[in-house]
Amino acid sequence: MHTDLSRRKILSGLAVGAGAAVLGWNPNTKAWATTPGSTTGIAQAPALDGTLVLPADASAFSKDFGHLFTRQPRAVLTPGSVADIQKVVRFARNNRIPVAVNGQSGTGTEDRESHSHYGQALVEGGIAIDPKPLGMIHGISRGIADVGAGVTWSTLALRALESGQTLPVYNDFAHLSIGGTLSVGGLGGTSQRYGAQADNVEWLQVVTGTGELVTCSRTTNRALFDAVLVGGGQYAVIVRAGVRLIPAETTARSLEFTYTDRAAFLRDSLAVMRAGVVHDQNGYAEPAPGGGWTYRLALGMFYSAPAQPDVAALQAVLSPEATAGPTADMPFRDWLLRFEPNWAALKAAGFWGASKPWLMMFVGLDNTPAYLDTVLGELTATQMGPGPVRISPMDANAVTRPNFVLPRRRTNEFFEVSLIRFPAPNHPDVPGLLAQNRRFYDRAVALGAKRYLVGSVPSMTRADWQTHYGTRWTQLCSLKRQYDPAGILTPGQGIFG
Image (cartoon, rainbow, N blue to C red; front, top):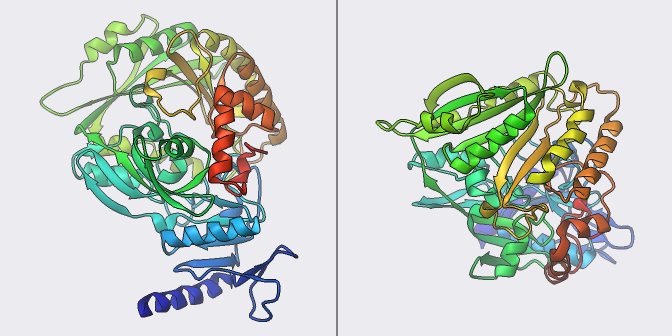
């Protein structure tokens, strides 16, 4: 007990240096009490192992990756324990204070930020939770990793590789918190085989909107497990997870094929996925120098010597329109880190800190050409910047999470069509890009498409969300009332109004 109190005093002292420590909440003025004095009418803040402060500089918690909003939290919780999160959530529930986890992902201190795109993880006038203290890998065994929600995927992947294992699904930008990504899905080049990262979770430990600590899985507290994964932070705060691992090969071969004919590109994309001849598959449309678009298949084949990748099997499913591009073999670790130079270049050129109105949709196979006619017929190179339009097929059989709602389709196959925008830092019409996103969204929905929770779609209404979730909507409303009855968790999505 003495150790706990000493630790609390030390942390409180650090908090005062970084900002004013919170002592209580005044429900009449809706303001924090930070100076000792009369306690009349003040709800005393709980004693914590970590800190709850009014930060001197809240900029790290008031902006996100999209850089489209600034939303100021009233306080920041840096938890010293999971119990701190429970206490603060209970306190927030009793006082109707909104709470959201602000992922604080990134490669280091200089680029720590929430990687939401449209203010989803920001909390105006509420409490932002910094998950970095939950950044511990508790254990790695054969087939599973026990990790805190603040661990990044890149950290876990490199640690798992030491035991000859890897993640089924790995993000292109992997410096994202595990808890944050599981809340939206988590996609990568292997999603054709393994679905989203949320499909590869064995169990979760969460703090619900009532402050209860619950362990859930496919066999225990199943309804909560299904609600939290791809749940947009609406039902509970993820604090720990059991993440699936698979055996890793030692080497990766990178291959590229380019196209000028979109139909051939789409046909080959599907043929490659159906044949299962590669491990990693991404497709892109990129502005052509003379106007129009070029298309690119970026593929990865994993192997361990003396075995070699079966390139002949790949070539057998490709059409004559495919033009072979660069090929390279690299250690699997280098494959995991292959995009790092891209991110460094975007940061150096100022694109990383600029506004980025991304849009990510899932479109049925039959409707993809019509949607691409709309999107690629209107988009310009200036509107995209150095970012591509990602066009990659997926198999619905790999997607198992109920909240990952799928587009209207005749077959199990559909396409992800994502605008990975990096417009110039001085782009003159970001509101125009957002309005364009809304038009593209409405066109996609008319074609039976569904959105990915990451992305920038202006003016989403409760009716829009009801249309998005379809038959699942009524159950989700019931789960929200059960697990977050005060409606305090992650209001930035605006899902429930």
